[in-house]
Amino acid sequence: MSATQTKLQRAIVLATAVITIAAVTGCHKKNSGVNPSSLGPTTASTGEAPTATITADPLTIDQGQSVVLNWRTQNADTVTIDGIGPVNANGTQTVSPSTSTNFHLTAKGEGGTTDANVRVTVRVPEAPTVPSNEGDMGSEEVFHQNVKDVFFDYDSYDLRPDAQSSIAQAASYLSAHPAIRVVIGGYCDDRGSAEYNLALGENRANSARTALVNAGVAASRLRVISYGKEKQFCTEENESCWQQNRRAQFSLDR
Image (tube, rainbow, N blue to C red):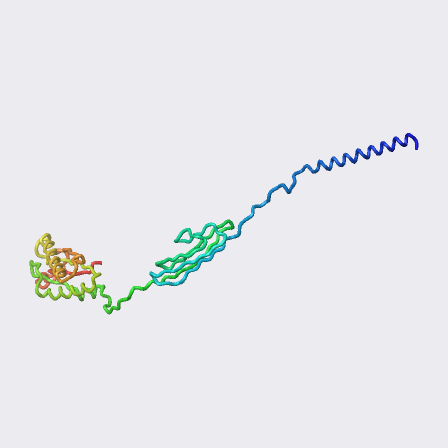
């Protein structure tokens, strides 16, 4: 081999060594990136959804009785029952609802919210029905069949003997029907001044009122008003007509 060939081979070996070193160095530089294994988890872990049940024993009670609520939950941080408030995760409680009630339980936890319900039916006794054969005792017709007007002599407000039976019948009817209230109107014939007859009419109404109170009717149920000679039942100028106008008239106080 000549000296020139020897020098050429050495140059080739040297160049090959340089290229190899450069390649190795380049590979090491590529490893300078971030290691994915050094990063944390990409999503946070979540808890399980809560579960809840609630029961009542018994489910139906009479008004005034009690019922036992029993509830169980899992994975819940807070538990509440409507009408009761916050409660333990598991428990029992005696309650006495006065009306039918829906007990609603809410359980909240890291995994969400869960509801549970139980309904307790309360039997409320019906008001007793009192049998009655009285008919429509509050009607005008029946009222006037039992509470009749009373009449007075001329220029007088004293009850006449014939009025006593009417007062007794009226008091009996009103005592049997305590819800009825009465207006007593005092009337006069058209003789005399308006002012005098207003006073006379009031005295006549008060006489009838006093007689009913003495017979047992509460005074608070009786209201008095005087019409004097303003409202005439009869307009003829004779004693028969005047007599109809001298009266105490009873009406329903609606």
